[in-house]
Length: 395
Image (cartoon, rainbow, N blue to C red; front, side, top):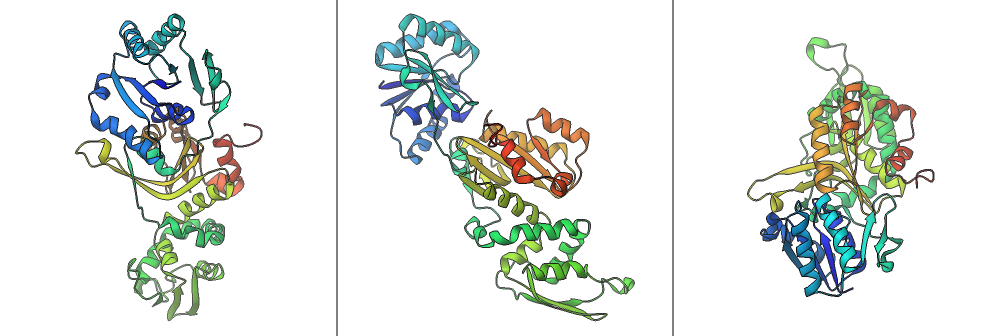
């Protein structure tokens, strides 16, 4: 096989897995007019393959994906031009698949498909080279954005330093769970006690013992919380002078950033769980994807709290320190479909109780839900493995 014919579809992975596995000399994409006439969309694939170090000849042939006769005519022309060809029917519309079946029957062209469930290829006709061939590709987070025309930008977190704090995330989250109800007030206190996120600001701080003059009997912050944070190394040199002042130092500038942000503790914990599970080949916290390259002049950006990849399947995690809203579910569903396609996984995580209406909507969108009850009683790492179908029972 020198030429591989692909039925171009909306799901990016279905357009690229076959060429990556079988490495033909050229790939011919049978596609709709809007793709055949759009160089920008074509360059998304070319740039992705170049990024992966691959150098196929790539052609885009215009056809209707709704007229079987027109699709069949184009397939015959491609066969006449490139006799040594094979056909991948993983993608495409129903009409395209019908035409592919007719073409396969009359021309006896090697034809195969890819099964997402089994993660391997199957011989449909005269394609023994594809039978039971596993897909061993391991994409990183950046790959899933590039294959759809997006660009991964640097987010709020420098992922290069996250491993330096790996041993502290579980203890940090345990402190949060112990003081969940007072956590927003504590974050507000840390914001008042520090000078923004200036990396050159002093780490040492002194505040009034009391919350305000009108409530002189109320401490400015939960004192037990401060003592627990000192114990796990997030603050140091804690000195409480009852009725007068509270003194301490943030352990470092990064921990100060996390203590000033309500959602950081949950995001860090889910990042840690994904890393600890050892089933992912890439995990990124605070992934910002820029849609500019695929959306013309419209500037669209999304921040995804945690993204992890397992083989050719991405996992998108949205973390919420509040009730789950429909708008958050819809946004996550769009990201999942846009950058992962049908095989992608998505989870929305909340430190509140998720109501039945939100769970129902999440189920409709194919989004798993993890709420506070599961954090308090369940095994989150095992749950992530089940979602990714990485447990022995579901493999």
